[in-house]
Image (cartoon, rainbow, N blue to C red):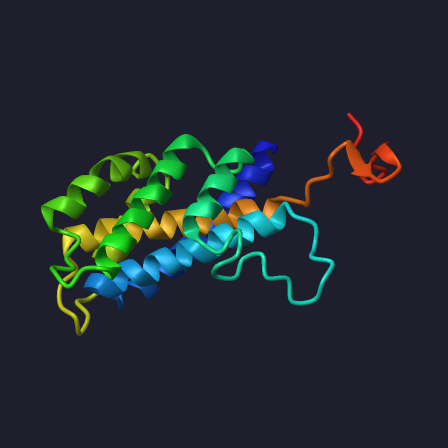
Amino acid sequence: MTGKQATGSDAVASQAARTIALQMLEERGRGAVLVGVARVDAALEHLLQAVMNPATAKGDGLFLPERPLGSIGAKVALASRLGLIDGPVERALNVLRKLRNALAHSAESASLGDAAHSSRLAEVYEDARTNPLWTPLEMVLAAQPPSANGVLEPALRDYILLITILVAFLEATAQQLRPMQPPVVMGFSGVSRNNGAIQE
């Protein structure tokens, strides 16, 4: 990817991120976590679909629940193994998955500020703050008037920023990818060259 392409995708990600951040302001507590992780899950699905050939059968259920890629954990693992995400992003996605599971199956507190949840997220936030959009988006959120839900707590603000950056950049990455074309394919006649593969 050239610098010009990266700049263009960063601009697209920046605009998408601003929109996502403002939409996420409407959520609080458990709802913010569930909605945020659902958005990340959908963006991961788009990322994986970008490198896959289209399904040959109508109604392909590869990403449906109870299917091979129906869980966010399976999507994260595959995206990592394909080299589509780096180590810190994989770690962040797995922390979000565990957080979502903890809050979805708990009748207890649903606050991101709880010690158990904030300690899980602290290292992820440190990595995410290196993204060039973190500070500008933080200023966008700070400039918003208090919503009907009250003043935006720092724990929720950081969570919104993390979700926003992940979704925007997963989608921007997906837009730049094409289906993978291996140099050879297996058939009943044996191994043959893939005519659609790009030759180096």
